[in-house]
Length: 241
Image 1 (cartoon, rainbow, N blue to C red):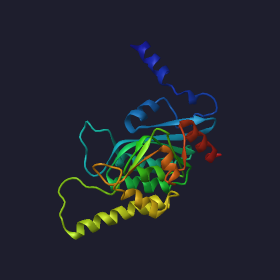
Image 2 (cartoon, helix red, strand yellow):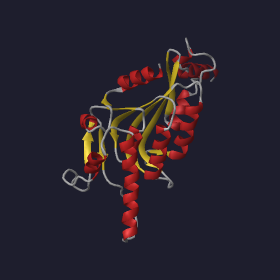
Image 3 (tube, one colour):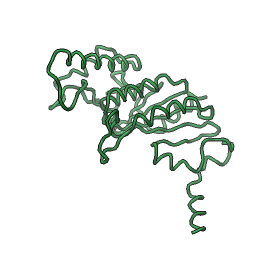
Image 4 (spheres, rainbow, N blue to C red):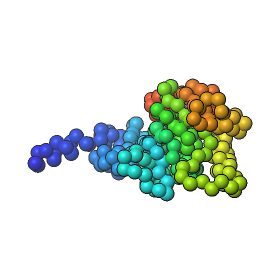
């Protein structure tokens, strides 16, 4: 048993420990546990250390989703973002996004925190960055999207009981305005163009909205560039320098 433990310790040792990263670096052999527990990991290039954070599945808000759902829990992400921004050893943040959307208020809260970070932040949409995933993608200082990825833009929706009174529809409109304002303020798309994408009735059979593939998301001004992981990493380290 003792020999097995030694081999395991050697296996999980981060290669970034060797070389230019000093002994006080936050990168250590517990990095695999960080991936499992919070979907994040620390990486380094030379003496520059970045935090890589994944936003996947459904953004979980005030209600706990079923166990068979892949979720990103906002109560985990929010304090983690504060810790990243305040940790002097971390130089930048890379956000990997593959989400179907989720809770609007939780998603906006995370997006607001990201947009207000003082450290360099780069996001990349892989697979899909739908619904409330759009504010999360554009909240970074530089955003990328993979060629094969897509983003679904649609109005705010609700599940469950809805009271059919004018106040309900006004509430949804005000919530949609909050999302629109954030997206417009943090990307190059105009309010008119984004509203047209949201209210498009000719593309989705069972819904209102628009599906944007990678290049089209860039052409509309929503995302900064089409790229892959290497492009996103190179951009982040350039911003750090």
